[in-house]
Image (tube, rainbow, N blue to C red; front, side):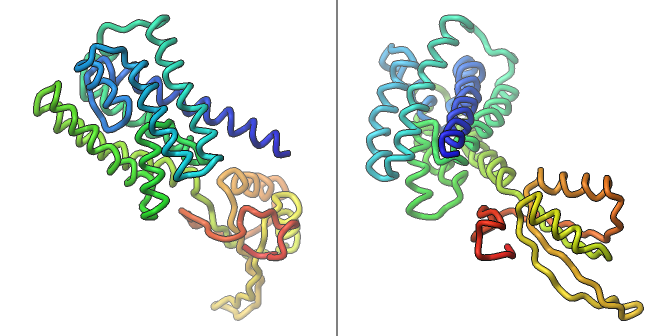
Length: 290
């Protein structure tokens, strides 16, 4: 089971880095947008030092990687070793097999928006499995660990210095766009991270509540909390079931209710975060509720 879990993380990290690398190569580099990241700093340094972006990216990542091992631990550091190697490899592949002379969109605003969405999603995938794309994301993780700031805000703070460095090789307009882009990047990361953690709190009243309880606990492997409810119209007593499910589990429950044609009154709430033993399956936990 552990090996399967590691393989899943490996695939998520590989896909996440594909999004990050594509955002950098196809939208950041040709448009000259220096959004706060190690890749943005590499673009500035490549202009000043006449070295390739991939080479500078590798050197800076190696330096920050050592800091990551020191402050964030072996697991994070090991995963970030892999991502730090992937970024220059992806860039090298793009540079040699998909060379670009101009922006894909021909419009800096479109490039900036596309870059923010792609890299924000890639970063969120990585952070969600305790990894990062290396570079300034390591600094962001350190800020997040020691200040408890949201990871997106930590990305924002870490990136402002790099965004400000764009003034060394570009004009004031690029500086302003870079700072705004860095701010938007942080918001995008938090948005995608929240989406990964979002759950559904389901409240169900039904005459067949025992069947529903059995399905949730035995098939979905989630806990159920039971409440006595009294109808205000005729004062009849009912049993209310409450459970917190993932988005996919919620869809499975609704499909099962439709298939079995069980009559139920259901209210659904969006939960942005669950703290505690929710991720421990019901049959493995001494807590039979959430």
